[in-house]
Amino acid sequence: MEVMQLDNVLYEVRGPMALITINRAEKHNAISLATLDDLHTAVDAAAWDDDVRVITITGAGGKAFAAGSDLSEVIHRDFKKALEPIVQGLAEKLERTPKPTIAAIDGICMGGGLEVALGCDLRIATPKSKFATPEGKLGIIPGGGATARLPRIVGRGWGMEMLLMGEPMGADRALQIGLVTRLVASEELIAEATRMAEHLASFAPFVPRTMKAMVHFGMEASLAGALMFEKYAQGALVQTEDKAEGISAFLEKRKPEFKGK
Image 1 (cartoon, helix red, strand yellow):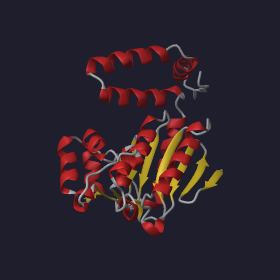
Image 2 (cartoon, one colour):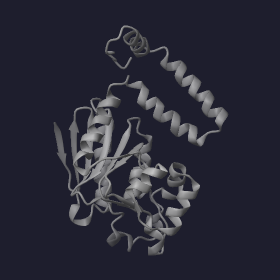
Image 3 (cartoon, one colour):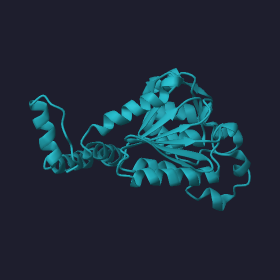
């Protein structure tokens, strides 16, 4: 198991999964600018590692995924600094990397922490987790992508409810509205993320990355454009060796041996 200890982040490779842990438990994993730099370093390492098939982000300490951006820094943020990518840049990187990304949430997931999770393809959580966009109470609005991504994920109605009201939402409601897709016990959270990663790693390598690209492109394109792009993408995959292997293995009732070709 490969391990890399950064100042604010722990990076581990566990089989096909890179596990990135925000490691500021004493600050409820608040995301400082230094933490963001470490997260970028870890995500880049996972993206470039051919053995990594899935990237999972979680928080240390069992009380928070991330409580938000570090307010001791935000209080000094001016207009020029606010225009920099900051959390938006990390969320976009998670969204754009070809590898599937999972946010494994245990506890508080609010503000900038929620925006990091929104940049992930999948979000799973524990029953004690809580979610909120509380920036309005601080005299500001979200700046890490929540006003754009949250309504796209949970719908305009619930997006407006969370953004305007700023009130904490429990895990059951988050599951109901599709903010998260699975609830598991705290002690099973990383095991569940690992099972998901192993499941995704069992597919032909082109499949998850193409599926991810189709969804992100399709959400921004017209329906006609998305459907046409889907057909061309499928047309590319039907010509791969992995497609022939996958169908042959199914017909022969055996496990496929995909090669990424």
